[in-house]
Image (cartoon, rainbow, N blue to C red; front, side, top):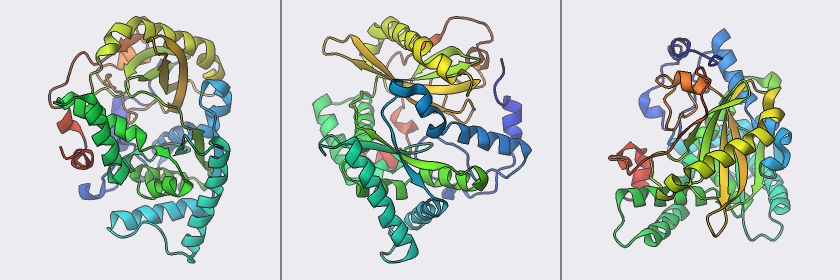
Length: 361
């Protein structure tokens, strides 16, 4: 069982990156390469592997084992409008296009079409929705939203009167999750226009117009807890490794739930994920969410999303080079499950300055 690319092959691909000034690369979340990669045989394979993990390819295969999803089609012109909005934002001007201009018309149309699907996903208009592109969410836009700081302050106040660095990190994670709850279509588009992740994904999709199939995915809001998200690694239909997703933070209760979590996630994978995805993906990275009841018992496991099995996908508590044999399942061992064992010294310093700055850290 092999990785899609060996470390040496990936290094060769990275060497073909265009010379982009470091100041121009500001993605405030996990890095994913996109149009900065020069076109070429191997790089094209890499990019198409990324596009193959888009939600249109797997959402229906998983059915009720992932969140209900409504799709809003994006045109090539929509993608270009979103890119231009981010370019304006990154240049320090207003991201939204001028009303009445061609981009302004596209912008208004997108808000209206998104509004139709939000009304279906949240008919009472009470809980809000989650919105992402075919590939990723606009979570990197969160630190720039006023409501993010409000959510952070509230989460920190709930945590402790004398918060530790770990408390602050957990509050930041909770605020970042809450920032992805959209009450109106306009709120969602505000984030989309300010997201470098969205810009990168649109650029990559435009590199392949012959297979351009992009959407906004709208999901009913489900209250999840930031310590109960996990990243799994799958090769040849076998779940080889599992990691705490928000791995910079320490969550004490996870230690006591280790066996229950591992058993529930592996059983869910075997019963509901392995076979439906086997013919579509020989290898992939899958994110799970676990739901507990008021007594701490596991009541539900969801698939959040599928990611490409590539070194540019965050390995969380695994290192793609050092743990390569584990991730490949080369030793045919039981699933290796890793949790952060205690508060991590310097964890706050590892965060992007935009997140630290938004929280006054």
